Image (cartoon, rainbow, N blue to C red; front, side, top):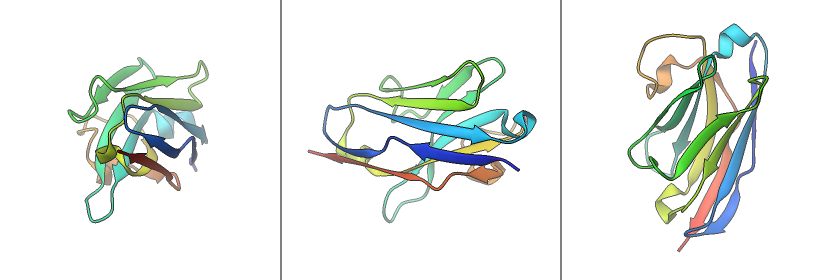
Length: 125
């Protein structure tokens, strides 16, 4: 069983930065791919960023490309989402999620087996 724990959310002004962390435990093969999703009030959950831990390949949504950066520690047990130049529209609950290695689109929430509890990010103008 995989467990994911997010931290690092908070409130910032537009243009500011935050770094979210996702600490994972459980069989590495079950969490070979890690993604961050977010959900704003009244909106669908959307994929923000993705990393394949084996080769550190990353993907980003168009809305965060160039502003958000994913990284991982050497063990692959912690994934970081560095968020720069934050905008009010980035306000949402951010969720860390993981799945075994597979080829389906990284932004499909239904393909992920494990989810963290979420962390709130609020960006004020």
